[in-house]
Image (tube, rainbow, N blue to C red):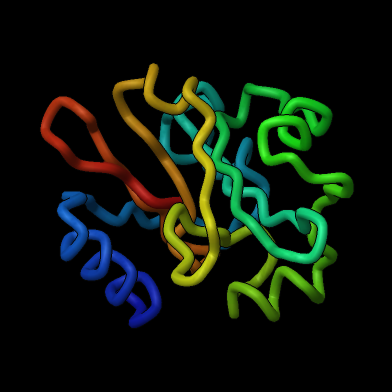
Length: 145
């Protein structure tokens, strides 16, 4: 049974021109567990990191196998302070549970690491621990986890 959170997000992505499908799985939070259950690897998965950049919150999308450089991000954005949002800040900013971050969060500046575009299929969060979003770039579809 599809939950309203995932359906609403899938619809919003489609409105933005991003074909997608929702993949159902056990209630999991860790990306490695989700992709393994779905038959994928972390090479197929993209994480959305909510961060505090000076006084603003931003989202950074990166492949789960890619380490990010806080130093490079600070230099690119010309900021002094950069940190991961606390669980409380994450929930307040996104309205979601930890481990369910989405690619698209209205009102949040989003930066995407170039390596995200190197993969054919993309798995990511839907905002619900039992659903994933899937996009296959060949057919212009993305998947949410």
